[in-house]
Image (tube, rainbow, N blue to C red; front, side, top):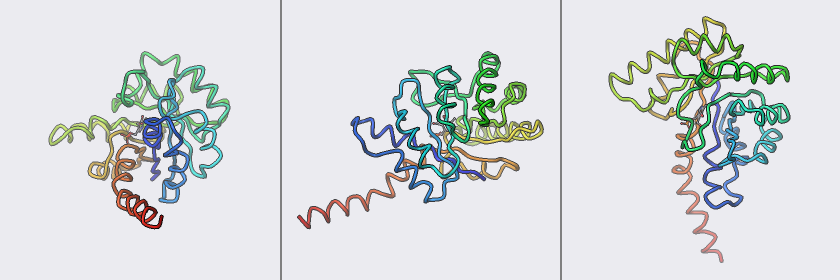
Length: 237
Ligand code: PXP
C-alpha cells in the first residue's frame, strides 16, 4: 500500500510569512525518512502554497514516487512535461476554494481531460484522475484512458454514523468498479488517524494520499521538542 504524503500544508505555513521556512522540500525529505512511499504537491495556478521552485527541487530530492497534482490546463501540462514527476493527478481547481472540494466533473471535462492525459502519456508519465465515488465517473475515467483513479473520500471523512457507512459503501463500490476495469484505485482527502483504517482495509486499493492530518499531527508531536531546543539556546546564551 502506497502512502503518499501531501506537503502543500507546510508551504501554506511558509506563505503566512512569505519567507523561507518551513520548507516543503525539507519536510518531504523527513517524510521519506518516516516511511512515506510518495510525496504529493499541488501546483496551483495562483501558486498560493507550492511554488515552481519547490517542484523543481522536489524532483531532484524525492527518491520515492513524486505525484504532481494539477489542473488540466496548457500551462500545467507544459510544466509536467518539463519536470517529469513519477505520476500526475489531474484535479479540479477553483481559485476561491480552501482545498480541492470535489472530484473532477469528468463528463463535462471529458475532451479536455482526454487531451491532457494523451499529452502526459506521450511523455511516458502515468495519469490518475481525482474523482467522486460514482460508478459513471469511473467508467468515464477508463474511456479517457487514465491509468489510475483517486477516489475522493471527503464525504466519507466528514460524515458520521449511518451516513458514513453509506459513504464508505460508495467508496468501496467505486474501488471495485475501477479494479474490474483494470484501473489502479487510490483514495484520498480528509483521511485521518481515526477514519483511515476502514479505507486502508478495502481489498485491492493501491494507495492513500494524505496531507492535512499528517501535517497537523507533526505540528503537535514536534511542539515539545521545538520549545525545548529554543529554551536551551536561550539558556546557553
Ligand atoms: N488528494 C487530493 C487530490 C487532494 O487535492 C488533497 C488535498 O490537497 C488530498 C488528497 C489530501 O487531502 P487532505 O489534506 O485532506 O489529507
